[in-house]
Length: 158
Image (cartoon, rainbow, N blue to C red; front, side, top):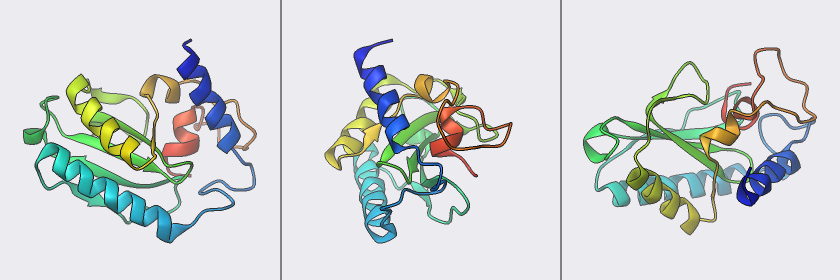
């Protein structure tokens, strides 16, 4: 495991709070929505397209999804950028999200990942790689049996 992976897993553990499942104790919906909307606009620019945006998420630990159309990506498939309610974490996968798991439906092209990460980092968002989100959840929040991964804690419905 790399030093960066260790740092990111430490961040996940620090953000985990068993009393706050859907969003952190100091959650500011207005500020989170503003950052999410800025990220959506920046991704539109980075991919020279109009992405569809899901802002209507409820009962989840994530704020919303930004869907980049396949025609605008090097992945040759739509790319879903998911924005967590916790620590401005983001992740993305080509082909969408399959059955609310961290498994990408297809491979995310390096150029697509680089553009998404650049837009996110400009807004102080933290890129969370899928290989870390597929690790077994070992935090302090009591979750259902099917919620076994870090993905479920920070990027899924509760």
